[in-house]
Image 1 (cartoon, chains in turn cyan, purple):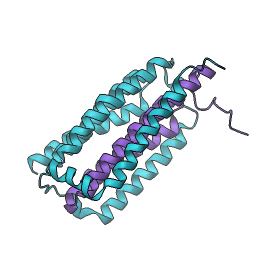
Image 2 (cartoon, chains in turn orange, red):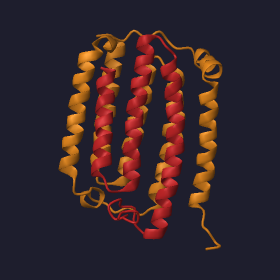
Image 3 (tube, one colour):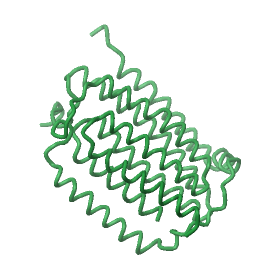
Length: 165
Length: 95
């Protein structure tokens, strides 16, 4: 095994364990902190895969912005502590469905994509990603920026206090 | 190996969405699933030597940010009106 594979294994174990803890924890604030660990591990995996621009965007947007949004959401909505308060009654059924999907995906990947498990990444230049976005994918880029604008206005309209009502 | 990690992330997200009743935790589980998709996109992009996967991973990140913003605004609005964000108690649109 190469050094890259060891690094990937370590990151995957940390990220997987904290993802499982995120969906089973009894405290919502701990859940947000486990989400930070998982997102940072995924960012590290992007670095191992030599996709550095995506890695830094992951750190900036997810760990920097989205987790702060989640923490504000948790602060503004009082959540009780405890498994019964946070989980519904269908935990067993959910476990069966999730395990079935996991088994199906693993079978599928094992069957179809065994060639892609090797690590042989040439590093991706950020300049190439930028050129690709602005040369071939200008239209989706504009659509995403319009979507962000609409989401911004929508969030403001939804969350402000309506004094006239 | 990368694909197995993303399958684990996706299944954890599925379990979280199905088993949780706190709306903020459900949104966090949705983020887990979107991250699993992004890991797959980047892995295929590197193994096929195509940049398209990374470009679309960036688009998915942007869409996820918009989704979290709107989702948390809706959750806070529901909390303001109902004093609870448990999704099994919100039955206004259920017949």
